Length: 384
Ligand code: CAA
Image 1 (cartoon, rainbow, N blue to C red):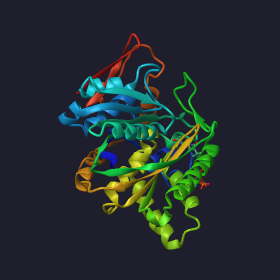
Image 2 (cartoon, helix red, strand yellow):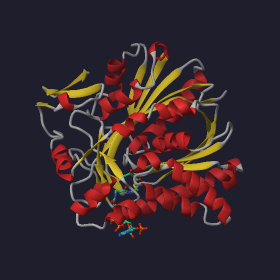
Image 3 (cartoon, rainbow, N blue to C red):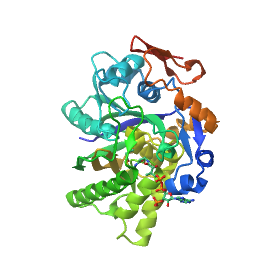
């Protein structure tokens, strides 16, 4: 049975910060951020958005009434969840009007959560071939103001529907996985910003890629030349470039150029949005789907990395997807508004992450689903 991605959609904030402006404000050479890190813009997430509303806004772009009836499992990958007990999937199910027979859970392993969901969905659909599974990877990537990680911030959500006979991409049953207990990036309980050992995390990212990519090639007998593209989790786009460079250093120049060109097409969206954590790899996939001339049966390699750490490499086979409508579905990205560094700092500090009761600035937020505030430690969501 062919199982994979039948629909895919993306949502982020209507606001962005220019990375050259941030560099100037932080007394850095703009080329460090633009070239050294490889980021042009970062999404600035309003205080009226959280991982639940970002997910609902992404999923509302792809689900229709038939899906609302048919979805029987919701898998919510996040590392910026809003409750230590209640799953984001329950809020999502309610906000989207998905039938109440569907079950759901939240999955956490840093940026690996959505990929873990893919594995679970594959098994679920094998047992129930008629099933439609809604998966979301939804996060706000938040580091300290003036920290070295600040340039790698971002946020947003990718939503997918997985099913048998998928229209976009069939996912391989084979995958190679590697887990090692390390402290490269983590967020202790009660912290609203991540802690990170930046250089160590970057080195480990590359090692995890090499291990899983080589193991996958051994397992499947595929070679680099069999892949039309290799796409990556992109905490910042230079990270994926470095891992790719290490993975294909023994290939011919022609082969390297082909894969670098495809990588370039896959990094376009991350470069103007920033890190999405769980959704990031799948944003790379969307970027490839809209920018590259792909043919049916082209094989795409995907590398997922979740700090702490787990890495996984798997592949997908392209089906006959509707490229033009995917391009149309992302046109709104051109309408985003730029904010100044001062405005970004004001919004950053207004994210009432430690407050008990609060009201957000939701009236200014054009998104369909918004967080209005919190009362008695209970989230209050709304719809425009
Ligand atoms: N022109 C061009 N390039 C320049 C430059 C200039 N004027 N000035 C500096 N650079 C280059 C540097 O040479 C360097 O390039 P190399 O990496 O090729 O050596 C690059 O810009 C970055 O410079 P620094 O190493 O000095 O940057 P930094 O120390 O300020 O921080 C960082 C970089 C460690 C990535 C930091 O942003 C960080 O900690 N980010 C968060 C952690 C992260 O994303 N880790 C990735 C792996 S973990 C993961 O994937 C999970 C996840 O999502 C978080």
